[in-house]
Image (tube, rainbow, N blue to C red; front, side):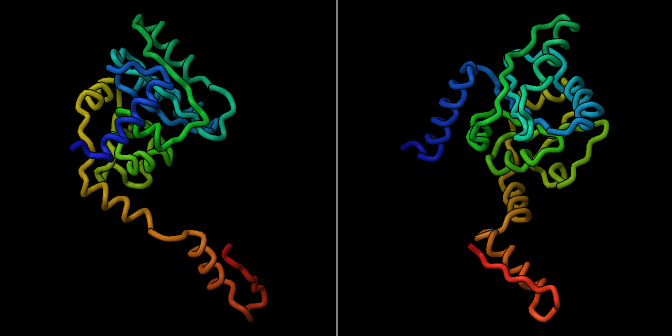
Length: 211
């Protein structure tokens, strides 16, 4: 009997890929962006050119825009311009904004992130997780050390990672999630912490009630 969870994931994968126009035999690479002018001007353009700027046969690139971005941004123009200058075919490119992120990551063959919380979302989704490495980068949460993301520095390393498709070690993934997430109601914990900080009699006490 087929695994119902696996069947559910396959159904999500088919639905999302079809809605985005991703061919059945294509690798779907989700790239999460950042809404920061200085980051784009001095880092993101160089990093994308270095890591994604080259032939990617059989790969469909999906740019997942940051919630704060209200236009499609320069991403399509960058990749198509690099392809034109380099004399190779640009990959199919789709840009999305309002989308169920978890379902998008479940449908993807890989996620590439830079300074993005989507790197953590990809760990939760169990998606092959790639982190842009090189100039002006920092692995703030220790994804690489924890074994839940692979660094990629250039187009060759990206192609190798997409061809390899090894998932993160399940034990490493569980350790990372246990370290960064707590079970239960976060709102109640925040309210209790606030109450313990502003105690009656301190002169500036406030009353906080959890909804």
